[in-house]
Image (tube, rainbow, N blue to C red; front, side, top):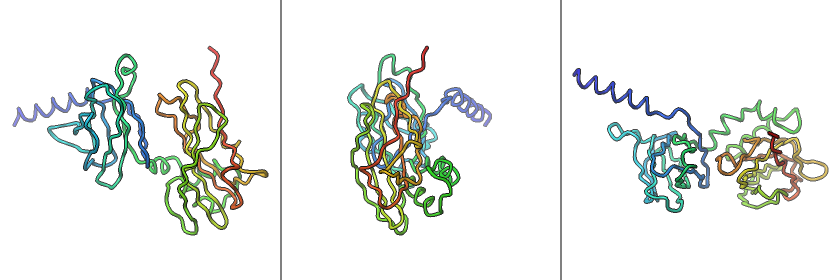
Length: 271
């Protein structure tokens, strides 16, 4: 018994020493999220629930982090080669499906990559960052009604709301910036209000862009009533922080083609 107890202490201590000091959160939704991982070293993925099955993982070694006491909510992923990236699908026991486009990276740049990631559903991000009070603080006008707040919450969570017809659009819009793509994902159409969900992606290798919702406009005069963005600065593509979701509540006469997206290039600081 003493030897067993001592062995357990040694294993726990070694696990503590080898535990990652920092973690980056990967937010997944309906589409695959890109994740660069080191070739030659395992990357740890901690999910919000246990993984029930994994699909399309032939190019990677995927297994529970601890073989002796498997916890299927913590998975170890290791590239088998430096071949082209592939999208691996993780099915969770809570019904969520996380699609990660895993890209093996080797050489000096691989040493800069984190090897511990927390994988969460995007609606959890909305819950963490978007309480009704925060939404009001981010709105384009004060004195928001309950209906506006409820519609904004539905836009962020991607949930249904009574009295609104939801259309999945996937429409590309011009941003006027060479490094930034914008896609209108969904439109919520109602009698009193319209809601819009935009995805902004920074594809530049070095430049970063600011999303200032105070500059947002839909039409002339401006028909936007309330807006929120989950990331105020979209970093270069290599950082993994290059995507922002912009949600807008506007008057029912508004049209998505009239939107002026509030994205601006962030000037580099002088050294």
